[in-house]
Image (cartoon, rainbow, N blue to C red; front, side):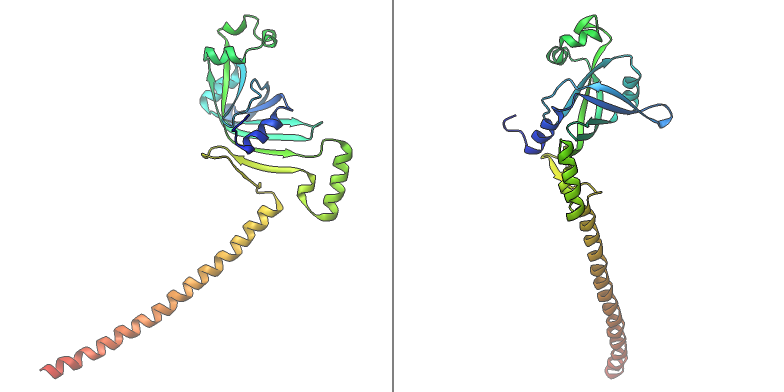
Length: 228
């Protein structure tokens, strides 16, 4: 993990606690469909995650029609929850299949890694939102009480969004967070004031402009009569 961005490393550490993800695709009629899959690569590099599946499965057909997907990870015991957005595609690269294959997969693919109906799902991750709270029930109870008294959401755990589509991963507060909402309100409150000042300045300028033009028009005929 050396040299990996700290936000990516943080996500990788959280993913190690959870094996099964719910993969959500767009099914017939535009309705969303979710299915459980086991993540094959725990070494999250900030770019992609991998799954084994059947080439002729409905989810592969749905991904071919609409590659945008969501991955949801949940560990009630660890109190860790992760939601990933990304773009998926089938990948039958034999080298990747060889690298990610394990004997446990023989239960699903008896013909082994050379099974013609075996394929990898490669998901290029766009963004990640995670929730990481106290793991024990005592920690949860104490955190809940402190949060009620202090009115601080952070006591209940960390909730962040990490944008991975940029050159460098960026972490930010989710829109639902109180601090994010207050920041948006402050920015919105400032905007009308600036607009009002600009509008007032334009009105003053508009009033002065006609007066100058009128004065120039009055002076022009006098110069004409004097020259004649």
